[in-house]
Image (spheres, helix red, strand yellow):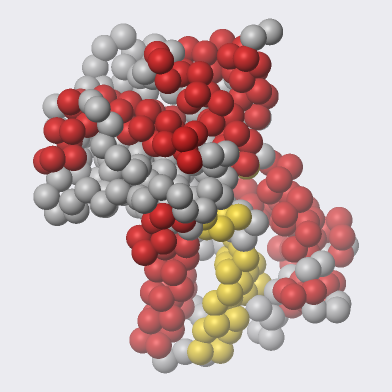
Length: 348
């Protein structure tokens, strides 16, 4: 096989478990059809870099289970006696939207049962810590919404809460920690919050040059993109300076290809509708810049905080707002006009 065929096969293999049982298993032809929508001259370097990145950012069920299993006996969390710790611990089931907490809790219960011979649903005492499980923190909005209400209404006067996620974005984690500290103070309770994660992704503005999200260095030579950026008055263009930490990217040149191509494609997707909402931005739903820019996806679904060109569209559409072929088709769809973002949107 040639290089392009090897790359499409590699990408298809990486995402092979995506929505398993709901969608057909991804094939090289599926990846090829998606890649053909980008700028022809850039498709091969785009595939090279995307293959490198997605192997690090696609979270499989096995990766989730392994991470949770390792936490069961992590001494920094549970001390010297894991069984005694989990017998006391209180696992919170308070997520208002989505099913990610239910899925994570199920996997965690399996790990605790296997390693400690305990039924997690039967655990919990007044003296135990509290556990909040979810998959990924993007803006921090969902964990704040869930735990703010719990702190105000049901939390004891003194408690330690462990927020366990597969990954978090640093701005979202900072926002969540700050808001939960404020919620505890307002309720006159002493609530300590600790965060546990497998992956931390830098996305704070003052660290944009070392960020782990898509943050373009330059405006592509594309009329639609230039017009989109010129129209943004509230948050003027704020490019990343090249040369910072590469993180998950293979090279600065490869990173710039991804940023440019996803930006061009995202602006094109927005142009398919007459009046897209402001937070529907080319590099992913968000409230500022050209979009959130995350490249984290899981075996369960693709967040809308990822570039539009990764998840947007309907394979059967031949025109209109959904006329884009998605690589990681989301489980639920809405038009750009009606799409909404809660900051951590993984609807099921």
